[in-house]
Amino acid sequence: MTDDGKSGLFPAGGHDHHACVEAALASAESLCRERGLRLTPLRRRVLELVWRSHCPVGAYAVLEDLRRDGRSAAPPTVYRALDFLVQERLVHRLPSLNAYIGCNEPGAPHCGQFLICRHCGRVAELHDHALDRRISASAADTRFRVEQALVEVRGLCPRCQAAEGDGE
Amino acid sequence: MTDDGKSGLFPAGGHDHHACVEAALASAESLCRERGLRLTPLRRRVLELVWRSHCPVGAYAVLEDLRRDGRSAAPPTVYRALDFLVQERLVHRLPSLNAYIGCNEPGAPHCGQFLICRHCGRVAELHDHALDRRISASAADTRFRVEQALVEVRGLCPRCQAAEGDGE
DNA sequence: GCCTGGTTGTTATATTGTAACATCCAACTT
DNA sequence: AAGTTGGATGTTACAATATAACAACCAGGC
Ligand SMILES: [Zn+2]
Ligand SMILES: [Zn+2]
Ligand SMILES: [Zn+2]
Ligand SMILES: [Zn+2]
Image 1 (tube, helix red, strand yellow):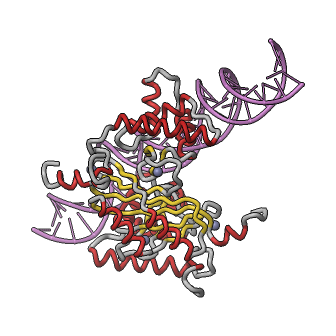
Image 2 (image 1 turned 90 degrees about the horizontal axis):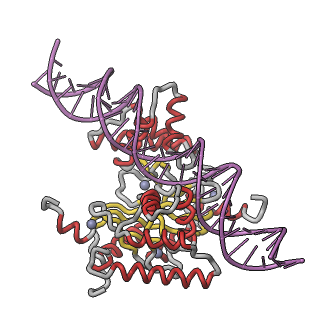
Image 3 (image 1 turned 90 degrees about the vertical axis):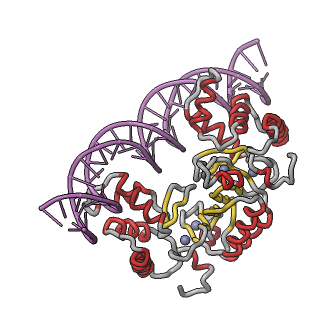
């Protein structure tokens, strides 16, 4: 990150994406080791494929990638791997897109908060704890026991706002 | 509502559901009239079917109901009606459930905020403006232009918390 | 070696959602 | 009234997403 950490949230920023992927994989390895879980080659590869994409990826896109690896693969293969990664909070599922994205702060328990650009498809994950607390408080008012929360915000990312009005 | 308006958010509360459906339909009629839109018999019927359910309903469930009416119906029929109703904010779509639920405050612009009970499937819609504002503020920090926001909270409703630990 | 539990492979199918085009119908125009 | 038009619906076919069920495999412990 070479900026203020805010405007660079969208991965279009000139950060080193390859390094991000490597860091995510290393982090996943250590988290699984701590938890006594098996980050098998398949799971690791799926995590890598999710992270390599700059946008959320669908299960069938991951499936295609696995096949390009030469690996035998069918839908259950990829769904099981993704389920594992979601369970362990290494990736998030975005229900409104039927797609998955790598969590940029795995290990830290948090609810998913996403800014989804309708134009370029990029997604930024937020970690706004005040928002977390606001959701908890609101649910507590109704005596609802929160187990998981998800915030999906659609709109235009800064870059696409600029492009708007032009030929796009 | 016979209570404090909080614990009764979950429709299991002893309110008159039939009256709610009628009120929703009447409200939809007047909103469409104001906006110069056509609440056709099909659209009206779909809205009624969504409202009649105590839980979010899937498109294919609505389709079955339409067929039970004796009406000729295929998936596009119901998806188009649902798309219209969602567009006009008369119903909300819950992406994590692939299902639809009637909006209990149509006309008032608001982001969707839902408490979804994983045990009984019932859903309560919240209207927490502080939460709205918190989301807007968080997005503004990143210069993201919000067009639509959605909060889906999963957990256990008060009733199902009580039932937990028993045979359920 | 053999059992065991978890992981992956494989086939088939279920569920959810759309594209494309035909038909119908209400409202407006002449 | 007859024609025109745009939106709404009917219809067929299909695409995209997800899961059930069972077989095969494999690492670790006995
Ligand atoms: Zn995360
Ligand atoms: Zn964008
Ligand atoms: Zn609403
Ligand atoms: Zn419940």
